[in-house]
Length: 88
Image (cartoon, rainbow, N blue to C red; front, side, top):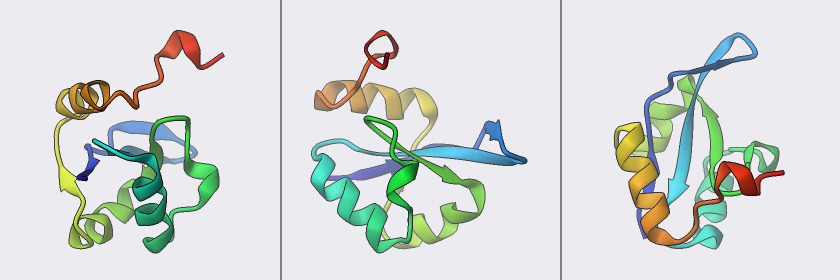
């Protein structure tokens, strides 16, 4: 399994946010996020929203930085992607 994180480009709540995903297994993604202090409420069906200031810690812990398009491609390829129309 690889945990991936993209660039923090999404503004909300006075911060910039990135996405943290797994390319294989949600259970391992949840375990990684918990170990790094990412709260469960940050999970949104197939990814965690993580604040920009968490990126150095996540990368040091083994997350791999990829661009947003690559993150989406790998999430789709994993079969874990929840499409926008299915989020309702």
